Length: 159
Image 1 (cartoon, rainbow, N blue to C red):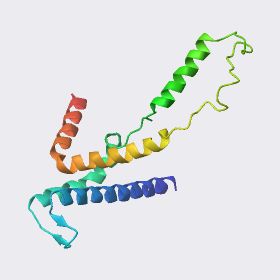
Image 2 (image 1 turned 120 degrees about the vertical axis):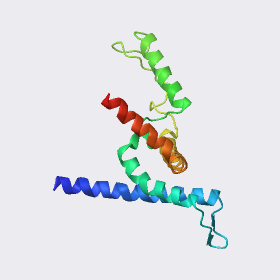
Image 3 (image 1 turned 180 degrees about the horizontal axis):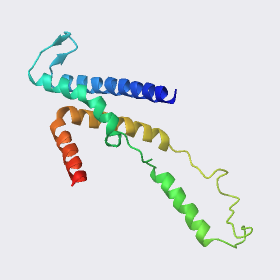
Image 4 (image 1 turned 30 degrees about the horizontal axis):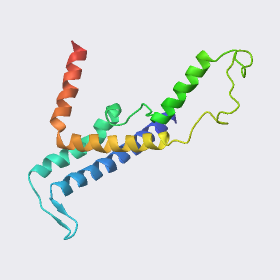
């Protein structure tokens, strides 16, 4: 049963990657003016075969090299970093003062919550989607370079 759930997750992930790569292919075709939405025309070019093949390969590459396309680190705003630095400095320098109890710094006039209003989590989501789309478009345009990097990495692991 556990293997069936894993297979279903992989299938849905591949389906999502296929939809994303199709959207990136449409962006590339619109940019190259091979696809015109106003007249609903598609001008076939031999180069489009290359784009279709790389679009077909892209979901499988994204499945195995997910770190190239999706950002795992969280980006924080300057406001959040400044507040964290402020709290660290206060914790290190202001112990055993007037408003401290048992060596812990307490400031009754500070915010009631240690977090300011920021949009860090929403920016991380937007950044992750933008990176995914940008890397997918780069792969569709420059697939041989990506494949050479993969072959070079495998060659280095074997030796």
